[in-house]
Image 1 (cartoon, rainbow, N blue to C red):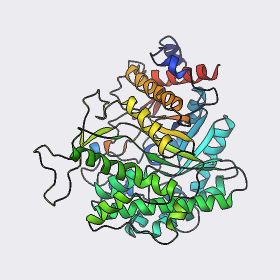
Image 2 (tube, helix red, strand yellow; image 1 turned 90 degrees about the horizontal axis):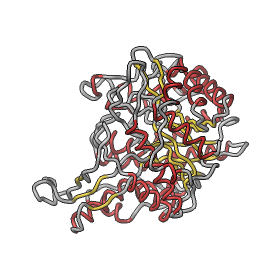
Image 3 (cartoon, helix red, strand yellow; image 1 turned 45 degrees about the horizontal axis):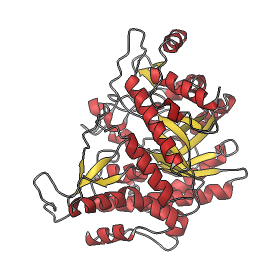
Image 4 (tube, rainbow, N blue to C red; image 1 turned 180 degrees about the horizontal axis):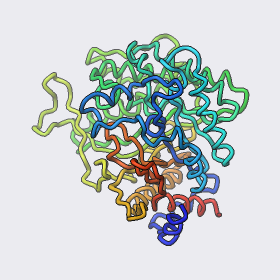
Length: 473
């Protein structure tokens, strides 16, 4: 650490965005985020049972290089070292997820004391370092037994999730104020159950729509349980991955494609959460395909139970076209074409366009259309082709520029009236990046996977210096 810190101190950089970022208040929250399966490892220790990601990683061709999260960053055994890194960087909040199959093996029954003990130790370690714990209850690691019983398309999974949430709160609620129920339900439903590119790898559009509703129902049930159990102030949230949905041209086909993308990407979540209803145009589109959202009496009242914070994750946006490469507006099944089109902007190493202006637009739109709940940006970051020097240090100016431009976009949204109160960089560590395996590095701390050595990158020190400057330290 001493060599790296000395080198970084001599290589500090400023960006063209610093003057804008400096307009943030000293009370602004600065965090970083991880998720259990991506960093913990120890997949078969202390009573943990398989999740859908343990299973999906064994599907030939599902994950780049056949990688798995079996070891990941070995955070389960190196947790104090990682918390010390967070403290060294001056970060005030750490968003981590709890592994459902570690805490409640099989997804039902009593809590696993050994599994809960890890999060007990993590929470205490954070608090001892003056770092605020921010718990995410579900970051995609559904117990395999619940998937075998139908997964999120099955209504019962929502009730199993509420039971699990209550178990975790009973253990940590005396010390943890900030709770996020779900991370990115769009990814769970669409990537996992419709497109099949993430666990559990199913390809069934109707199942995905049912999953959307039951994820939201599980969120609402968990909010009710945690609110009722709370004996101290509690801040309850859900995190959505959101973007803009702009038409590629002004044609009617492209405008309709943008409307559909906005409906299934944003409004199908925020309307029931904030307005206790599903968007009428989305309901009509689904009905035209013979699909009905499986709403029972009382569901929407449960889903729309008040939350204290809206978590927003953002990485990129794409334009929407209703015309395919051959000029057709419908596919072979007669369904409207929905095609994402690049803007032609610079790309990250994962192939996502760098679009801070659209980030500002999205935040401004959410603040305007769904006011009344403070926003925290719970994930934002970028993968780049990091090249360490002979000491393992990474000077990642491209990541620094990405982070700076997106934090400046938050300033723009705030000054347009959106109540954004915090920013969490994704991610603390290079880690298992789902279907991309270990090929893509998002961390502000480099992990050398063979040795598990952690080395803060240039971006980590830039982030530290930015936090200190905004705080007036």
